Length: 617
Image (tube, rainbow, N blue to C red):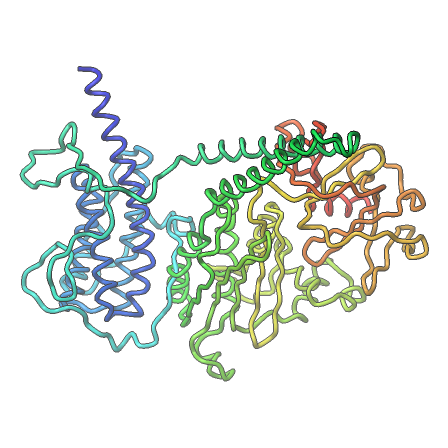
């Protein structure tokens, strides 16, 4: 009896987990589709897709006994049903109440996920939904629980504001009967697209209540499976160990070839080593692809965000998204959402002008924000561009001088890109008016620090009157990197190859001193140089040029730094291992790896490297 009870609980828990996963996917699609519906009110297929999603959530939540979720989605479904039967028309006010209900639905589902059985007060939202359905003026809006999550990931949304909101197109055919089943364009009922959680058990209105052990329907073959993230992380860790083993094997083979050159027995060993190397590389790529997710998973939250901002700022904004199928490691995907939110909010609030200002400037009343992603080698490049007023470089200069960040003489000699870097400073803002959206100077410095933590680079370009562009360059994965091995004194360090601009063997005559500090003149660049040991060692030896004729030039955004080393040891794939809590906070060190000879070597953190170099210079 006890086993049966446990089995029933396990089955019900699995069903609820599946429902929550599916509900999250459906809500994400609703967020985007409701925004699309506002600018395409005559799209019957889109309206039916929205209705089906709400209907699926309502039906499954009803079966599972989540009454508040059922009540709210049922009322949303009533409005959607009237829209598709032309009993109501799509207006910004109707979309506002639907989107607000969707945000509240997210809160309800979060409560289910966390096991919070406390009920929310739905009186206000239900009264406003009823008023909308009856065509009455909405009752005054009260604070709802979702307001607390306005800026959280779960409630971020965007959309475009149509220029023809006053001329609305009705969809569907009038019908006096409210049919809650999905319909085709001809009005015939259709089955819900895709597999839903509800497919796992029969939905029967005659059932007296929630069954203790639901009967499972036979599943059709599926093309995808859900895998726990911990299993993928474990697989990636084992893949890293395999790469380390491969490197060790390759080094042993090289040593054998050197010591026993020409021996016949080595031929078969070399062939086997080559096969292992090839298979390991292919397996590594396959495991990395398993962790890859389309960047559109992050981009999908922005159409609603833009819509909300356009309503709040009384601007007409069009969001254009390209490259959303570009894939990125899940560990990076999780970190880039908040920085992009800050950038887009700034573009909409400060970058784009009001329709009146744009018309006076000879522009179209509708401002455009473009969000693009593409892959360049082992990096992904994300660019946010707007056609707004742009940054006034003179205003940035004056603000930087006012805050003591630079002198007037030094700032006049700076290139434009370096001047734009001031925008990413803490508390830096040229906004004349502080709004609820932005203007306090507390966002862009967070953006920069978050991107640099991912070993990424962020740059800003702008032209007054034409607009601005923020470019983010990120590594595809943070687990395995291509590294340049360098020796400095008796230590071997690994520099991320993505940050290495070039390596040079320079003569002493090309090194100059400014304020007793060495600099390298490389073509048109003046690059400060420093011993790598000085940065990472507790006992720096100082600058000894004659002993260290090799320089590695590394870059962070527009900044460059020359690292003096003894010699180059080659390139190797490095699996990043954490140093643990005791050494994990060491500035200038990203982690460690195990080389093919079994020795542990430090991986240099380029962001920390620049910070340490600035302190000791």
